[in-house]
Image (cartoon, rainbow, N blue to C red; front, side):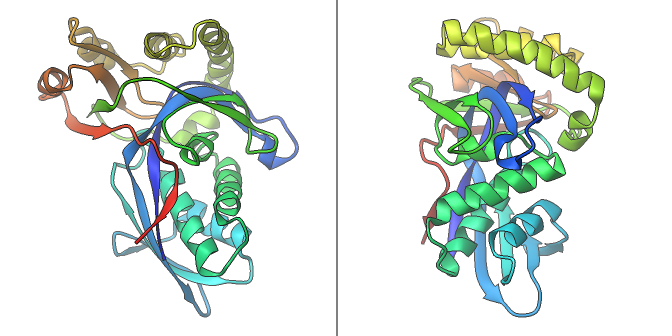
Length: 284
């Protein structure tokens, strides 16, 4: 069985990880799903679960844990292809895990396979501190406002009807460890404080321009934005606007994508993709 899960980029967020039940933990925030995602090819195995990233065997603790939660008495052969870099804020950890769990759930006949895959992925991400809200957004696609943390029925989200269809990214340096950020008490405190303010501002005017502008305010207020990000985004000069990819050493921009792509060239690896309007799903 094969499944696809879109990538997800967070613009701003507030950590909400105090609940005793893991399904209630996560984050509130806003972001968007992209067509660069992950494809998982899964079959039932005997004896042990083997996980490969592009045909190279990996320990893959998040995916392995999610599959254990999904089907504790089953084993699988899993091959995941990530279409965007890991550790750069594209939600690839959740995308690969979600796709693998969805394919596995269908393969063994689990009722409501998509919800089962979402639950297993979200809990594994929270346990490993590799993500707090990607899987929730990836379950529906598009621009997503996460109103309450966690997965349904605890969590609550809303699709945002924005017109942007394409986005340009620039990877400016080495990957950032999400778990390192989420284990840093001072940084988490800044994220909570700034995120709550940004969320209140966004809820007043939840528009596209406000999403991008508030994302950039959040990146700078938390201290996550680097001088290079400020320089590159400051050079767009009216052809578009953007912000930092959370949590990665990358930036995104919307606008005149051809001009933005040229402007970003020379600063790092440039990627261009479309907004994914669909959430995780099975493929042929």
